[in-house]
Image 1 (cartoon, rainbow, N blue to C red):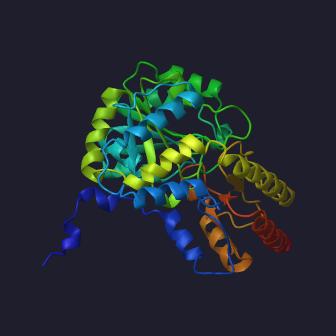
Image 2: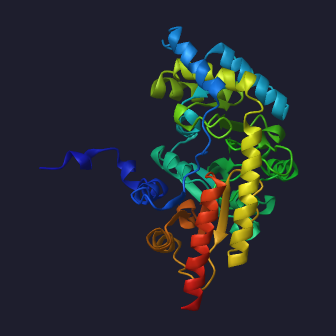
Image 3: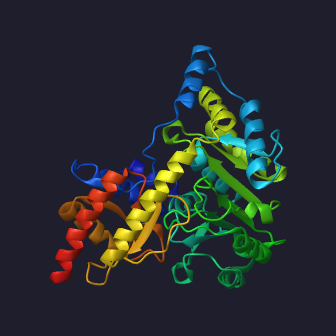
Length: 392
């Protein structure tokens, strides 16, 4: 008798495991290990946002919400994007409230992808997109940008467009980057837009870290190419609302209408009182991220300085809260083995760079979304570990 488990959707057997999550779960088994793995702010959701949700529940705002989102939230998102990026999205038909950026990504890929389509992903990059594209029956082609200061250049993009031609359906970008913390400025994004303008190619722009730009003004490829760009954002990083699961998609109405179909049948709607909390965040929480941003910059500078003194090379993070550092040659060069050895022998957990695709080999991602005190302890442990291995 055949096993029912062998009779599932055929593409699911090709879906890669989410190694980063499994690694983090392994690290959590050790209470004395300092966690520098997952990208979750160590700050709490601001009280005024929590109180807005509590008030909404007390007032019985707990029924189904409109499937695109509560009008007041759609209007607040539209106003926020226009204020920060100078882009206008009609709240009636160009914005969708989603169950975090994760659901927005899934709905978008499912709406766009056909078997045989190719989506280009600059790597090292966030691995979630690889699985979404595979589930949709399309193909991810990784563009290794590690030799170009971890930035996609117009020349490299053109090379891949020439190679794959009309099969290219989309370009996926996360800016500022997870895992490198590198941020492309507006001029660099404008140059990429020039390469694909007028072609039948979508740009999927994940801008969840756009409040955490440390150097230049916020850049967005949507500013250069609004007619082809599908932009994601959310509340997890800016307002420390990771567990609330709320985000949004901004896209031209013809594209938004197709994504909306997938969203409706996959999710029905987004939690009503969480939307009330999101309204409060946008209307009264514009300064919430400022003290967090100040703390992240202090942590970044400390960890970068410490790593440099130990011989770990890395691009300087201009956004997000990650340092992507290359292991010195005298250490284990299999980054996954090295990461597990650091858990067991240095009592620190950092994510293997190869989990983020081509160009991530030999690197480790250090998240500084933890307290400075813990970072200092972790760097002392790493310093001791590195010094001992260098003498061997």
